[in-house]
Image (cartoon, rainbow, N blue to C red; front, top):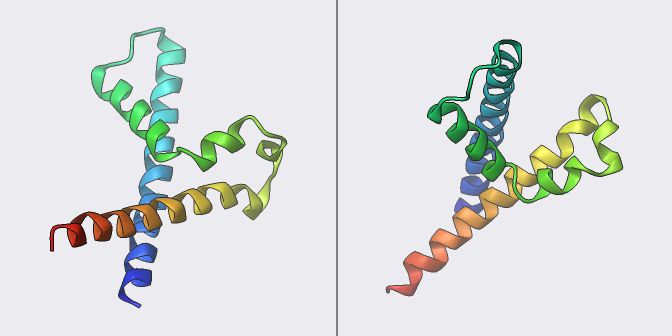
Length: 101
């Protein structure tokens, strides 16, 4: 039961951090588009972090026909992606730390 709780907590954190950084990155992109200025190192890092956090499920859905979906259904890839990250982090840490015992 403890593992499931950890997966849920990490998944929720991943979801909100991913969405927040995505919105932040989008806002930076618009300021770049409007002014023509170069992206700063922080803005470039923010972009790459978003790309990493959205891997693999959101990345797969980006170019599919699913992208045009509206409403609550558009969040399904983000939720699935966050759940996958939560599962891999929790069970990956368990695998790594139990190996040394």
